[in-house]
Image 1 (tube, each protein chain N blue to C red):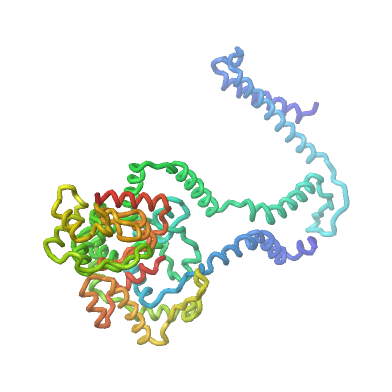
Image 2 (image 1 turned 180 degrees about the vertical axis):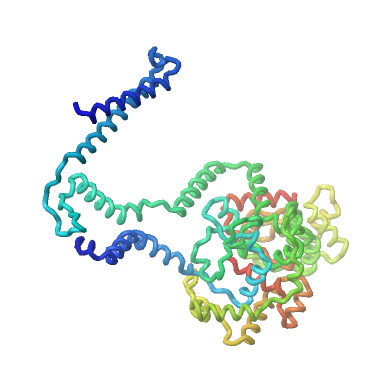
Amino acid sequence: MFHWLEKHPFFFAVGIFVTISFAGLVEVLPNFVQQSRPVIGTKPYTTLQLAGRHVYIKNSCNACHSQLIRPFKSETDRYGDYSLSGEYAYDRPFLWGSKRTGPDLHRVGNYRTTDWHENHMKNPEAVVPGSIMPGYPWLFDNLADIDTAYAEQVTVMNAFNVPYNADLPQKDGSTAQVKLASDLAGAQASALEEAKKVAADMKDQDIKDTVAAGKIPEIVALIAYLNSLK
Amino acid sequence: MNKLVLYGIIFVVALVGATFAILDANGAMAQGKDVMGQLAIFGAVAIAAISTFVIIKYIRQMQYDTATGELADENWDGIGEYKNELPFGWAVIFLGLTIWGMWYFLIGYPVNAYSQIGEYNKEVAIHNAEFEAKHANMDAATLKDMGQSVFIVQCAPCHGLQADGMDGKAANLNHRIEKASIVHTIKNGANNMKTDFAGGMPPMMLSDDADIDAVANYIVDGFPDGNSTGATAFVNGGCTGCHGNQGEGIPYVGPKLNGFDIAMVSSVLKDGKKSSIGTMPAFKNLTNIQTKAVAAYVSSLSK
């Protein structure tokens, strides 16, 4: 066989390639495929949450805040369980970040609430003395872009098979669904429905009035997104 | 002795001699004072001599050796190849590596491999064991200090460093209850107990606004000895019947009013809380000792 291989350099090259990459194929690939699967309990974003994610990216929150908790005790004590790669299965793009000017936000939904975010976004120093984070008052005036969020949902569902309207296994053994409306009007209605729940926990009367009038300010979408980070 | 060997000897002697001359400029080695230097020179002689004669051996082999053996079938532009036996040492190494490879593939890598999560788990286990051992018999002051440090990290973002709730953004923990809440509860009664308390508190135990105000101030200030008006109103209103003489509470009857008790703080930390101020998330990541410590610290604030 070796003489035959020596006479056929192409197959020799293929054989060498397989031999050299064999260890990598059997040890790296299965782990990689296993770990990048969605973790049980991970759900795709709803329309409002995705619109909030766009607000998050638009305002470059990820420039100062990471979304990746490393497996060190000092980090898990402060931020919660370390992050798993499968938890980013529906993040496009992921927002791991590489520099923490502010704290990590990967599980901020576990330890901050709607009313806190509302106070904090208006004036961070009012709730965190000495904070260097600037206020984001325009989030209370600008309206969230629900249309783009819906377009992204439809795109990722068709292009990447993101499981909207499908039964997703949850940690307690039950299943849950993330609904995706069949048309834009339906998506706007469901986003507004969700926005009303967030606004109910907020203090700012202007925001409550805006949502009651059928519009969704950016702050509501952003808070919905931050609350979904768990 | 042929020429090549002669050149070799001259080369070794020249090399070692030059090295010795340079290193022993002060004569320490020649006088026997520098043992390490002598050893180094001895090593240099050995290396130079062995290298030189190994090279000479191969040069001569190239010059004079003739190859014998069976030629392989292939022939590349007149250059052939012998079918040599695999050297025994190579065969042993090859078989050894094959066996090691199987072991590594089946056991070595999967069982003994390094894992980041494994290291994390070890780190946490060691820390927890040390923490338990160190704080097994904590005195009250240490418990309070620990509670304060946990409070600054976990609670201060909402309740503030002074635990004053930052202008109504969260509950003010410097009082057990806000005055407005006390007045409201006396007028309207209360029935929001969790499992420990059966029944509820009836409304209008006190009807006079002045009395209600006195009782409210008395409770907010933490039952001070000097406030006899408040104390009298507290007794006359029948508050002591359920809440105890000093508002210390009576198990299964009425809750403690002169401070936070550990069960209450633990329960809020475990389940979170929703009120007119806002929503407090649950803090399930705190250990039992930390929860106790936070409760001790929070209790100390209202005294």
